[in-house]
Length: 173
Image (tube, rainbow, N blue to C red; front, top):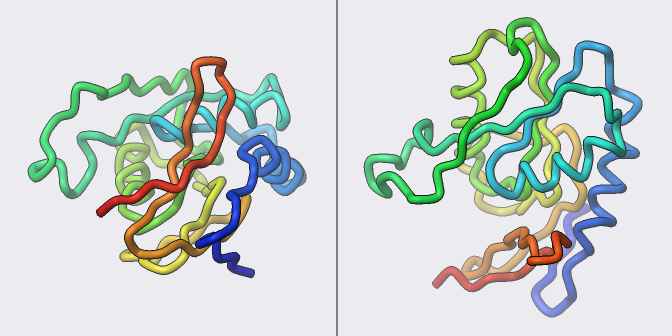
């Protein structure tokens, strides 16, 4: 079910993370590792990790150099290091992102992961599936909420100075 949030408040990030944890937990195996995509996916993965299994290996992935628009947007000063303190080869990867929109960031993340080895499986968990403008045939396995917003807006995950996460509707025009 897709919810439209044109004139409504957005769901709470913590509630969506709790919901994701409940949905993901039964599918975990001893072979599962958690990988958050910079930046919002890392924040969400940090919150999910103790709710899923605090002993599960986890890491972070920066996809800046794998984006198909890298030549257009260039290198940003906010490139973050990739940290994968485990073998990717043969692992079940639980890839976490904050918002699934066009699918291009997830494609870039999969390309990056394959540079580290061939995973047995990659499953995708997102806080928000932003319905309406998917450009690639990519779908999340676990979704906190499927939302629809006007074409001139986007949803961002924000981390406050206190570390609290919240969702914000942002004009992109």
